[in-house]
Image 1: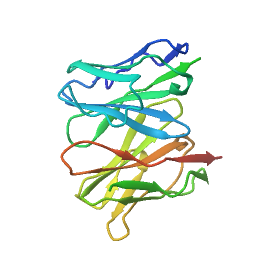
Image 2 (image 1 turned 120 degrees about the horizontal axis):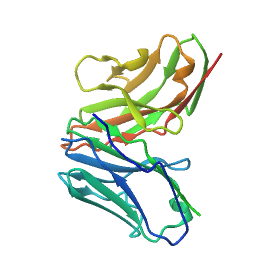
Image 3 (image 1 turned 30 degrees about the horizontal axis):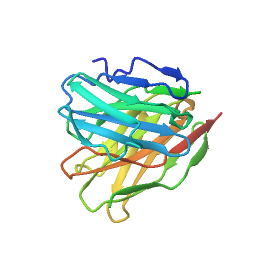
Image 4 (image 1 turned 90 degrees about the vertical axis):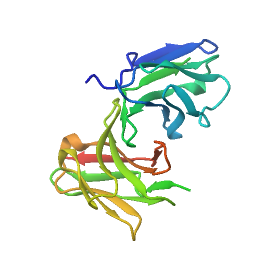
Length: 112
Length: 114
């Protein structure tokens, strides 16, 4: 099993640009989660999906953030426009419904 | 409301000595409890989990944790620390509320000295 895949480990962009982070969950898992980790705020849940449907997006910080899950094997988290304070490590995780989540390696986003 | 408190932000031990990372939780429901480990520049890896079976849970790499309902605690222990144990450890609570939302503690950074 390849685990949760976040193929981009580091992403650097300039303020005002659009940035899209990508995630492939573990095959067969029906829950997908997006987290953000910063030194100041720790690990925060941004949004999660069940069967490709967004269930709870209360953690999404602003309208600049959006997430989609067009199918069971792919999800994106988009920031438009990006700001320096969005710099963080963004983790994707998936779960098969038993409360155990498997995390990807994360994408470190730097907004200049 | 559900919450989790890790009582120490940093713990430092010598190699070969015991490790104790403390965690207290608050949950109105029957909780599931987890410990995750994060090595530098890596994702989070599940160490162990408690889901209402045996109160003493054994995990990977020699770690174990004991669920104590009366103390609302789920402390992580290891008899003998290894240099490779240096990492950040997160205590996590979930509850049987019908979905998979996890609530993370602030983390404890474990340093292991030779």
